[in-house]
Each structure stands twice: as C-alpha cells, then as structure tokens.
Length: 146
Image 1: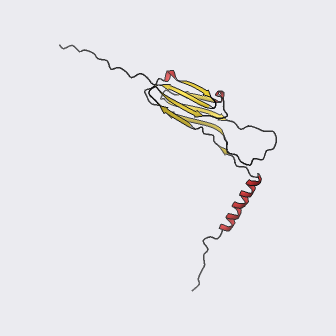
Image 2: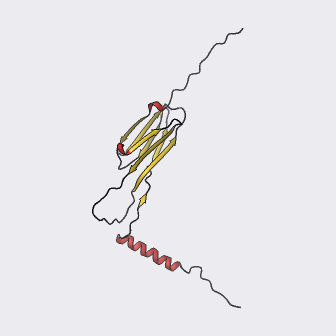
Image 3: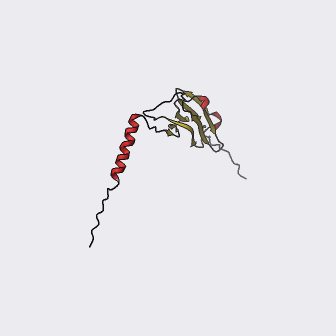
C-alpha cells in the first residue's frame, strides 16, 4: 500500500511571499491604488415641517451638482468630483479620496409640496428642503332629506 502525503498548505508560501513584495512596493511608493466611484454621504431627515436632505460634497461647487425632482416624487442628485490634474510626475504613498460621477436618488413621501423645494450649498454640504403640505381639512357637507 502506498501512502501519499498531502500538504494542504503547499502554495501558501508563494502567496505570502508575493503579498510581502506588494507591501514592500507600496511602502516604497512604487505602487498606486486608486479608488473610484465617488458616492456622497447623505442624511435624510423627516421633521414636522419638511423633509430635509443633507449631502456631503467636499471639493465640489454648486455648479458641479444638478438636482431634479420627478413627477413621481423621486429626488435625484447628480454630479462629478474631478481629480486634480498635476503636470509633474507624482508618486503617491496613499490614495484614499475617491473621484468620479455620482447619482443618488430618493423616493419622497406623498405629503410634500414639490412646487416649493429649496436648495443651498455651503461649506461642501448641499441642503435640500422639501416642505410638507398642510393636511387637508375634511369638508362637511349637509345633505337634505327628501
């Protein structure tokens, strides 16, 4: 009877060696990782008078952002965060900021005045306010009896 030895960890040494090489190259600044797909962080607040959306848009201006509200109450924020271009060759040690086009959409409740939406942009924060409609006062109608 032949006994075959199986080493379940065979090949791991090569993987660990390659991982160490990658870490060494990152530390020397020779390898760059880029993050893409900028997605702004958003808070949506529902208070007694309005629905308020706060979106963090660092590095953007109001001209970089477009806001739309569709007939079916879908609020959409679109824009693009562009990478700063440099003319000289730069070797980054770390890249954590993300760039690119973004779209964020939100379904809004029915009780809003979509004709009175306001937006402001200050210190990299976009604030969109959609006021609530006054609740309808039930009408009472007297019915005559024949």
